[in-house]
Amino acid sequence: MSDLFLDEIVRPESEDSRRSRRPDRAERERRRRERRRKNITALVIVVVVLAGIGVAVWKWGMPLIGDLRGNPVSAAEDYPGPGESPVEVPIPPGATGADMAQILFEADVVASTRAFTLAFAANPDAPGIQPGVYRLMTKMRADEAVAALVNPENRVRTRVTIIEGWTVQQTLDRLASVTAVPVEEFQAVMADPASVGLPPEAGGNFEGWLFPATYEFEPGQTPADMLSAMVAQTVRVLDERGVAPEDRQRVLTMASLIEREAKLDGDRPIMARAIYNRLEINMPLQIDAAVAYGLGKSGTELTRDDISPDAKDNPYNTYAFPGLPPGPIASPRAASIDAVLAPAEGPWLFWVTVNPETGETLFAETYAEHQQNTELLRQWERENETDA
Image 1 (cartoon, rainbow, N blue to C red):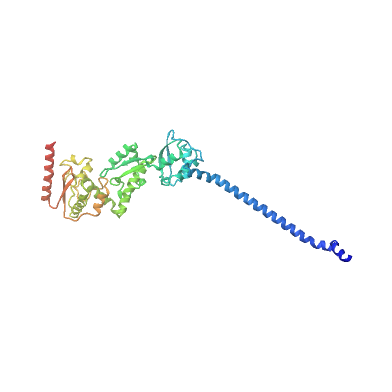
Image 2 (cartoon, rainbow, N blue to C red):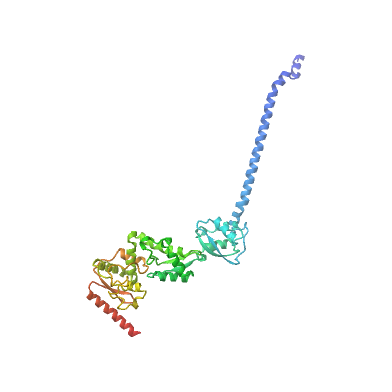
């Protein structure tokens, strides 16, 4: 091997060679720094994600585990129950579980909103909670508070039943006795009929427009609210049957006569036909219930003078004036309204209840037949008077 060859092997790199390799090293260093920066960024992202997962597990996972173990409020502050003092709590329409939680927390019914919302979520009947005022206890256990709201028996309501055939005065007396609101407050509201929705065709007269039914009123509802509900129900019943506004007062007037005269639902369409038949021939209706209403009496108190064709001081004297009386004499039920709208077919002009106990009523086409039926009533009266 020659010295020249050895010189070539061990000869250091020339300056030009080293200069040519410097850019390569710089590029490799830049790439290493870029990889290091990306790795650090990725690590930070992983740490943030893991931290978020940890928070989520702590916030939602732990209560869920408690729920699966049968204790939905184990991770929330809760009262041990069963409660201390009675309290009435309003639940407004459209309230969510969170809304209810806040309301009950502020009323000190539950120890925390979280306890209630978890108990709400655990009760499958909770979405059916109705708006209203509820009678609860302070310091209740959250799940017991939810159960109390689910139970409709805990709603604070005033239930008022208005009987078919009652007059306005009877209805107001019942409202006052049940709600403890004086009759005068209802009468004051009625001085402005439009404020409670009484239609113009009623002419300001509430008679016949306070529909007989059972109503439930929440605490805080006013006399105007109560009367509005009854008038609205009458309008609803008429609208459902397609009664035009201009016909409402006439239908209610006829229906009220049937309501006070008929005892059995099956007789109502027959009585409606008899009334139509009389109206068609301009024959006085001769309905005692109307006469009694105009005089403020009961039907059993009427005298011969009261039903005289000459007693024209009573506009409701259907013996003195042909046609319908000036307006309804009571609040009719739906069956009486239906009878007016769909009367039976027949020639009847007369009717008489021959057995006041059972309500049996006989109808007749002729006066002679009617007289025979009336004698059956007299016979019943004699027999029962003897038995007494």
